[in-house]
Length: 332
Ligand code: PBG
Image (cartoon, rainbow, N blue to C red; front, side, top):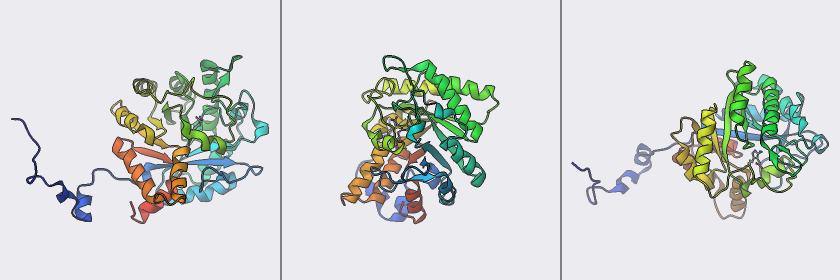
């Protein structure tokens, strides 16, 4: 027998929306504070806190982190993601400051590991916060980002961050094969429990601008020779599949909102899918709210719910604490 959906008046879908209690009874997706991952920028004393293109986001000194991370934990957030603003005199073509065991990121990890041990510390792995040219990897003579030598550098960077105490590392560089080789290096060095979260699908997007100013990256050219073409789906799903096969524990799709279709399709490959609401998406909401065009809290909550609806299990967002506060006040 063919089942058909009842028509009006046997089905009245407004019945499911008649009051808040019934609406909750039929609510299909929920947003929790523990769904949120908070990305944090770290600076040294020579740099300024303010990031003009990201209202409400600041770069923190290592000494300010404990209070911030503690507060995030109290709000129900269970993971933070660190990125550094490397002082420009420490940047170089080979980004070797990434391997310094006492660089800003390692200082931050060490401090928070002791001060707030219950918080999961994730770190971004890519060379762009450390290179003078702002690319995620090493350039050859023609200015092309070399795949395999870059991976060797990323392995060194990963092991450096893990030695400082990172619980998980998130390669965001888009080199081919790096998940496998980083996983091998972790295993060889006895780091069996380190989470490896791949930015498997990172699109060559215009929405990363504020992040680049936040970490002080002076990008020469663009990243189209390694980040995914925004027009492509099949290629994005191949990235997801490969990185899961290579040993990724979770997959990040970024940006988030313009790529909900990819989040939705990436489910079912065998690993958790996380959405990254990137800096430009954050700035759009903040700027629209500042112009009184939209309600900021409602916009963040609705968009985060859209990530959950599309199939993301976690959401990386600069507004994590603000959203967690809304959820606590029951605005969500
Ligand atoms: C570094 C990196 C970038 C972002 C996360 N890691 C910038 C880039 O690829 O240029 C962007 C995040 C954001 O915009 O919030 N590889």
